[in-house]
Image 1 (cartoon, rainbow, N blue to C red):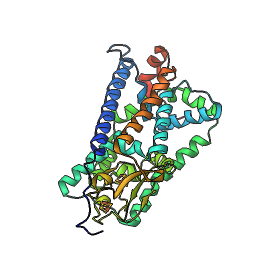
Image 2: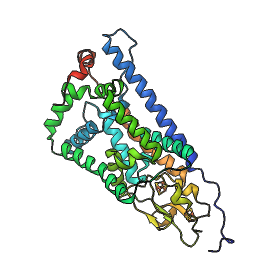
Image 3: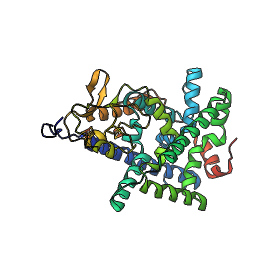
Image 4: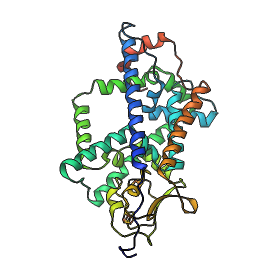
Length: 338
Ligand code: SF4
Ligand code: SF4
């Protein structure tokens, strides 16, 4: 199409909605983190500090326990009693990926949000982000799938009684406290690794998500079944390349007709960057356009719907007597992996 004839795309609102959802989810996680810290301090001090109820949402940070519980649910039909919230969160995120591509990563995940702000900072400082050579990029991208395969194998090879024994033992009960302690008592090695990851994320877009996150790898594989695709209309495209430049997953949608990749997070940054009307859009079957607000509403509905149902049906909380927390929380780091 002649550049003289192309029609400018109307203003697109997906990114303001996406940033608002990312911020809301980040704030929710900070709130959960503070509540959980106060909960742990209460039991560490023998009841000498403010009593705060354990926030079940902290289990969203326990992906392996959540996978184990999901296996128990699938194998027995029974809803687990310990850390069920993590399982429901995993179910909500898997459902999002199945319907709305890898939207958990692009619209909600606090680590994804932090990664995004880090590469934006890098772009501000260096006026660009860096990309690894193609071969290194492909080799490194396989790491997250290898990690995922290891976790799936470990959980898949455990029997239901073995999972119960693991989760109901001291290690399983306080694995959330151990996770908090890991970050609170970060040693030299852990600190250096964290600093390297942060630095790499400033230079390379979504370094952690792209190369190392097994949770994102799982979401990406599920997203291959999503009915939604980024679709380009070559007859309206003016070949400006702005979409590919805007894509944090480095996908070449300026050269393709549809994006099928497991790396696509459905973030719609490419759609927002496209200047030509109707040249690029998020498409449902039969080429129906999916606006940003549908994506935002769908992700929010799945999250609130699944978590709301678990709360309403009384399956959200881990109900353990305080006595157990008084016994285990102060000694969390003494329990090693069974
Ligand atoms: S193709 Fe578009 S929607 Fe998919 S990750 Fe890239 S910018 Fe986001
Ligand atoms: S942003 Fe991409 S789809 Fe839109 S006109 Fe430019 S090259 Fe074509």
